[in-house]
Image (tube, rainbow, N blue to C red):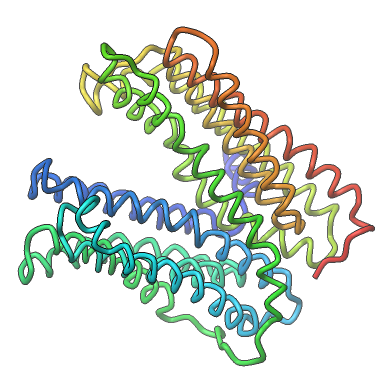
Length: 423
């Protein structure tokens, strides 16, 4: 038994357990916040809060995760261990991105307030805080991951989650109503940053800035990849809603809830992602490609095993969990749960290959694989009569194409290690 546990632990990148704990606390507090807000405000008043919440998840991964990935990669690959040069340059690039988004928010503030936030101006203020806080938060997370400070990385999620709850309690006593919840959403990332940096040592920003090209040359490809990833993660429920007929008005909700259950392993996979990229980047920076291949193979084997367990679990109890969690009206067939779990398992494999390609300084190839997979989705979904089956098969084929393409591209990249220079 101990040997098996040690074997599993050895397959995980350093920091995975710590980040998993942070994500668990963040998830529990997020659920508590959503439950409290929906019950306190009611369905109609809660809707704009839900939209702000959704925008925060879209903007974070879509625009700022590439910056986090590049900062983590470059810092981990440096031999001198200094983060100052990288962070100073990333701060300039990230500040420009945040500034542009904030300007757009202000310019279109009236439309955003009236069309998305039901006339609540404080939610526009909350959106501005979200943009600034997430930009800073992803930069801090990238720096912490690059130097292997995963305890601080995990504390970001703890501070973000608990801070949101504490903020809404305080603001509810002063402002009250929708505005209190909107500002709590916007200010939560700052709480995460403060807790993440508390007690950190050796994170001096001294030294000249890194040349902008060391970071910015990869951000375009990473941005394309992050947007494509967001589409892969979210396009299937939207397609169900578009294709549903007059007698299928409840199908989008049923499909979404089933997908949420099937993707539970993906939530904890974020912990592996956070620690995998710096680990692989450090090996690439040291030119230890044989060790990189061994580490990645062990990790990939664990990911495949987790995915297989998830598929079996959904086949046995997936439909029961959906009904218990959401009610009998949301019931789906066992076939649906198996296909959704299978697509989630393959998606974890694709995301693992994506981290390896980023570490090997091939973000363009990684982005091309995502685009190729997305191109397959409309082709597959065009065939068949069963709505759920069409979308599920399209999703499974999409992630399979992405994973296969990335496997080929990573293999070619590793075979040509003598032809590219590691920065």
